Length: 554
Ligand SMILES: Cc1cc2nc3c(=O)[nH]c(=O)nc-3n(C[C@H](O)[C@H](O)[C@H](O)COP(=O)(O)OP(=O)(O)OC[C@H]3O[C@@H](n4cnc5c(N)ncnc54)[C@H](O)[C@@H]3O)c2cc1C
Image (tube, helix red, strand yellow):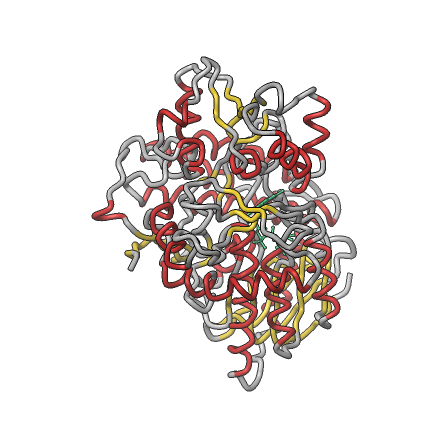
């Protein structure tokens, strides 16, 4: 195991969808770039196996197809969870170039004939979803980043940020196969580590069989918080609907094409409960589905039998774009969308944005800058990006802004090296310990606590008890034992998961109302209180804990 010291202009932590776009932006502007990822950037992150929808307005002539109408949609479905001026700057201003860029790198958003295949769901006023085959998108992004001359450190997990006089000046991490430790000094740093998964018990028992990337464990949010940055919207627990026994997002494809939600009594319940029916915002669909299950009206299905031949053929041919194994799953269960409804269920929770158009995580401004100098954030790790469109546009914006920041600095400030030696010993401790808890034991306990106390129905009493139990687990974090470097990575992920869980419980306790139910549903404060709570709960490190404050949406 060696200690390797590197310096760069821009350090990008997380080479997923947002991180690769950030790297492209910085490298295209002449910056020296290092990208680190726990996996291999050609296939890592949420869309490593493929993806199928990109949200966009295209100005093709309809009244809903403009920036103004899109921002109105964000305002309505966001319900006070994002600043429109920031969405305008990190998404709208970047959108035309993002669409061109996808085509430039060889994975256009268009069909073979050059047209856009557009569908509608999730409360949209028109067909904002562009359905496309994103199977090759991630490998093409990886290749482009390497061609641009970025230094790519695959399989390097970053563990902490280096700070100097209140600014972020780099990061420290280790190679999960060789154990080499990297101390990277940078003039600007972009965090793009995705959202937090493996945080809740899941119906498929295996926590790695989850609907978003199981290796996104909130590390970036925790590093940023510890470096003094603010986080927002951390109280929201995101869920979706999945084919029963299978984990993949898939929801857009079925609903976007016109699928109808059906309960065990034969009622198309969303059409009764919501003015937008099956195309209601995701949180409403999840809320009413949970209600149906609670009332004993299950099982729940999605019904596509009424679709015409052309739509069914398109749907079947595109089902594997997100995850190769979905068509296999359908085949093996003998599911046929043409002849019978498919059973679905509500997924496990995750810490992620309250809607498809507003995010949660590191608080950013219009330049994707965090509240700490030198630190930028993008993609699902920050509070104003979400989903594919947010990661592509916001990632690029963060890369551009980080490069401008660098051009205004004369020298990279030197981080005190002595402190890193102590940190390295602390990070490596689980592997040298002779015995201790396996990471999985603590992680399973965290998931159970989160599901029982910080789930889709919350009360002050349950949240306080949950926090106390999480603190109880925290006392054992320094007793974890890793048998190899791979397990060492897992022990650090467990630490992040626990920290995010604590922040979630704390912010959920602070917000004494309900918003975007069931993503934040307080049984003791069941109503949405727009007079007092239309805005962001901002959380920051204070002493050994965190403190919360409230920011109104402009
Ligand atoms: C199968 C699937 C299909 C989806 N389909 C759609 C869709 O059709 N439309 C849509 O809008 N959204 C979709 N989503 C959601 C969307 O893909 C994500 O919101 C988006 O890709 C997030 O991008 P990101 O860069 O923030 O995160 P990611 O792309 O997940 O990248 C995060 C990266 O950070 C790395 N990382 C994490 N921690 C560390 C660390 N400590 N050190 C170094 N590296 C680290 C990870 O390895 C990962 O590569 C889908 C998600 C999945 C899983």
